[in-house]
Image (cartoon, rainbow, N blue to C red):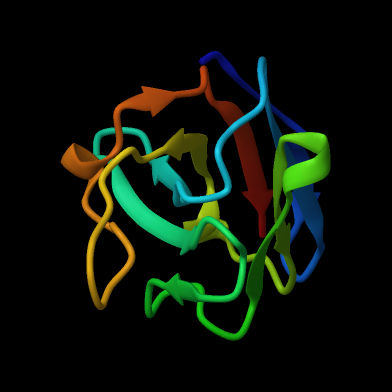
Length: 126
């Protein structure tokens, strides 16, 4: 499956953006999907993940309370609503799909995700 991320851009501190990620073909509702990000000179880090049916979500501490992940399985699309953006949120944001089925938790490590989008750049200026 190919994943296409979009919605990145430049905003000022405190602003909002919504990222979208659409799959090229129907994704099974049993697969978790997630957003990761990579800032210049840093390793890729987990941002948020959502279970296949969309009932459960997990966020990194750095974005909890500011970002919201959601999905529309009928449209093969996930979203990341980002509010109260900070300069430290500046990064390339990647969407990913996991085919790992776990009991009791949603995959949140990058090596648990097998399909990745190309990334969309978010720049937050102070």
